[in-house]
Amino acid sequence: MTLQIEIVLLVVSVLFFLSILAGKASSRLGVPALLLFLGVGMLFGSDGLGIQFEDIHIAQNVGTIALCIILFSGGLDTKISEIRPIIAQGVVLATIGVFLTAIITGVIIWWILGMTMASAGIGLLTSLLLASTMASTDSASVFSILRSKGLHLKNNLRPMLELESGSNDPMAYVLVISLISIIKLEIVPNYWIVGGTLILQLGIGAVLGLVLGKLAVRIFNNIKIGNDSLYPILIFTFCIFIFSVTYFAKGNGFLAVYIGGLVIGNSKFVHKRSSLNFFDGLAWMSQLIMFLTLGLLVNPHELVPIIIPGLIISFFIIFFSRPLTVFLCLLPFRKMPFKDKTYVSWVGLRGAVPIIFAIFPLVENVPHARLIFNIVFFCTLVSLIVQGTSLPLIARWLNLADKPRQMKKLRDFDVDFSNDIKSVTTEIEITAKILSNGNQLMNLSLPDNTVVVMVKREEKYFVPTGKTTLKEKDKILIITDNQEALLETYKNLGVENAQ
Image (cartoon, rainbow, N blue to C red; front, side):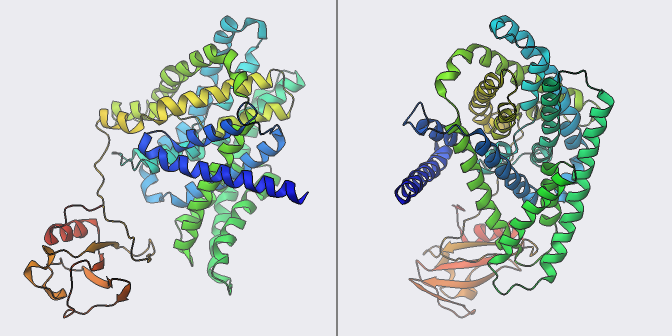
């Protein structure tokens, strides 16, 4: 048994390492890291190097926990001030948009499979179930791609897309669960009861997310823990607590953890920065584990028979049902430019969430469950390849990408400041050009409210004064009010490369 555990740990460590390398390579290749994570899982799976993983219950549990962490982390990183102007658009897309996408796509799938796979005997309800699993945009894909690509979008598009992707999973989840129940019971549902249940679940999830999020902040600021490293663990505990309590209260846990994260992330509490950094890493690890698990679960040879219908379905989702849904939902918002709506249509990314939802029919032994899973997996691959790789290109093509203001990242100074402190930091290496007006710190042409707080000379650090003599190759840590002042600092010192 010890040997088996060691083998498992060795395989897991190799998978993690290769996935991290894949994530590093993704930015250079212009390919979403999540797609490469899936690729690593498929490479090591049954059709690759032969790792046999067929436990759908474990995959479902891993996906559920990972999705909780990803949604919670997305809420922590989202500023309410940014989403407030576009909250109406985001909510409409996350609710009505998901419903319309499921209906439109379901009818299309029923028609397509009737022509391409008539022998499978796929009915309308099964087609609607298949469509519902893919009705929501994937939060893991949207968060990771928009942030890792460093896309600075105009007109509040980024917070709107993140709000939509972070809050639309609950609607799709309820549709999937409802359709599974209808198919298994083989009865005509009372649509009023189904609709009422949906509204009740979303309402309970929203209320509990808000209340438990505020409770968490109060506890963080009043509890006294001797070990500071336990505060991020405490926040993680509340993430799981919010989800599980909401589940037992018959609410939607996914919506609750997102709103809980939103409340916590926009509040002041002790050790906030270290906790946010902890969750950034935890969210990436969750994505890695989730995509690796899903990649191991699929059998690539089973995707071959559904390539043609899968491509057709993907084409219709990307170029027809998603754009049609977006333009219908945003019709009341007439001030929103056409090109903004076009870009929102394009960011209909599928990822881990549709695959996780496609596991539910497998667990419940729904007829054609494996076919549903394979089609969803294939459509996810197409979405990540076609849409995920082209987000920066489409943004530039539509003139919606702002040129980001870059600053030199801290490499020699391991310091960090709270988000509540309105300041920015950078480090600069002293050159002969910077010392041309004199070699004392007071001779540097620095804007008002900009100070040098530390100097690194070789391997030694010290706090300078105005009369400190600077030398070439010294590195200085600068803190200033805002990015405008920082850019002025670069200009005054003749620093061209801010990266």
